[in-house]
Length: 288
Image (cartoon, rainbow, N blue to C red):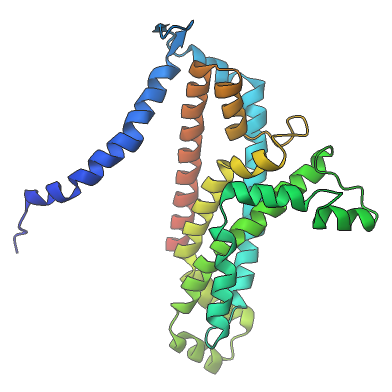
């Protein structure tokens, strides 16, 4: 059977293509243009070639911030993915508890990022914050403003509180899509709860877990607002991730060429690591 081609359909997606070109491609090309040029002001530019990229890739400042990002993202994934799966497995499948749990899980996702940072900035204060005041009274020397370890713990707890709900909702969607016949067959065979999870639930959640890992990796690797509001990248440069360092370079130091080159490298790293995650998890799912 010959397939009929209708080229008029392109006109239906043309507005979307124009919108994407205006909001994404054109700004990206502007950044690329800045990354290969330099200026002394007065809107006068001259060709710099790949010098900014060489400076970025040979900079200890860049690689140190990169290390912080990788550690933070790895920690976030190691906490939020298992925790999200555990919570989703223990959520009710029927009754009045379903909408209640879904609403409670969705609430943190509705709060804007800068508000989340402000909440935890106050929450962690030793004088008026519930977390800081409680830990101080329990004898812990907690101060996220001055102690690097406390700053990291605060930022990680903040992200876990804010985004674990996304993993829970995705996993729960995968679980409720499993037909009851699978569980009935497992019950007849006398399968344990671990066997049901390993051979029925986990394979059925494979696709949603792929989405959860990709979304949480990209979000955590590009995190900016929350740690900037809470710690400002401090104490010192302890929580200065690549995104915060990029803003300091572009706005604080007004080094547009180097900042543009850094943003391109940053984008390519995120793209590469996301592709690695996607390839590994997809191949693993096919093997299973």
